[in-house]
Image 1 (spheres, rainbow, N blue to C red):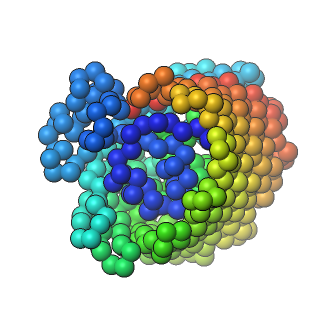
Image 2: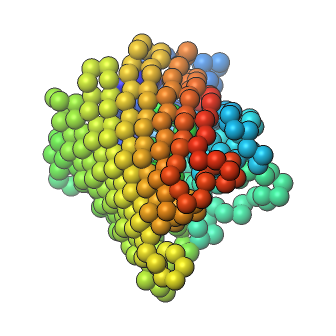
Image 3: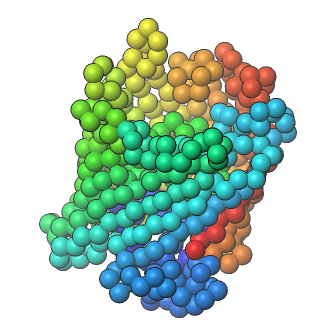
Length: 405
């Protein structure tokens, strides 16, 4: 396991525990983009340069409001030199030989205090960059905010805008209302929370955001539960009548360093046709000293997803193994098999996709993280998926840098 040692705001950590799929990430990469008021160590670029964090400069800190953000930027080289400069079907880091700003994310947040009294908070995120193409929600929320003709691959996304309420009921019940990141999967849209700069096929095929209500409750010191009603996968208000439920259950054993979680999203994609989508994610995480191992299995099905009313099915197995070499750097590998049974996810017909990634995380100071990686993808598909349909494999060499403000 590679642990990035940044002082962690306890309210942000407790908020992170609301999501079963993120529990391992909270412990695995204890990141928070606001300064810790109880520790004088600068955590962001602004505080390192000026001695004050963004909240102190702007003035909302006395009200419990935090301001923060990060920028992730990088480049990668495709040894096949595709003429269209596309690394597809790899997502997000999908442009070859071009330096891009992947994410410029700014947020304002009031984290709820989870103790013995009621509390109200919330969060709003603004994101600009090339990753926003994959992060927007359907239904006239954040699509079309700027002209694609002017900025090519750059756009704006508003991935989170919610109110959170904590009620001192039992062990403490919290609820989010609005637009927020979902609970499916291990990898995260916010780039700093991931060990690798690139993403798995499973991540691209999973739901990113949800709109509606999500309730979280700790049953005891090991078991936690999520239950919510949302408008579907990555949808804001396209078909308000097509509702979905999302739920998750997590078991954590601090003595053995084991976390097991299962989360699911189920409901119709469209209001006026049979289009039931079922997507689940099962994740095992195990700490072994300096090692951290993750095993993830996802499966998705959707009714009438293909022409002639055919159903679609896709599933995957992803494994991660990381090792903390020192406080400032770590090593990691990721291996994946992704089955696109009907060619619905990646448009290359019935296909198997395989990927092996090896990378390094280097953190020379509290506000900068650098992630070089080597990735090899290959496939068994009806249509060659790489280099514009010319190749069945590709090699990517990539590096990015994440700066927290």
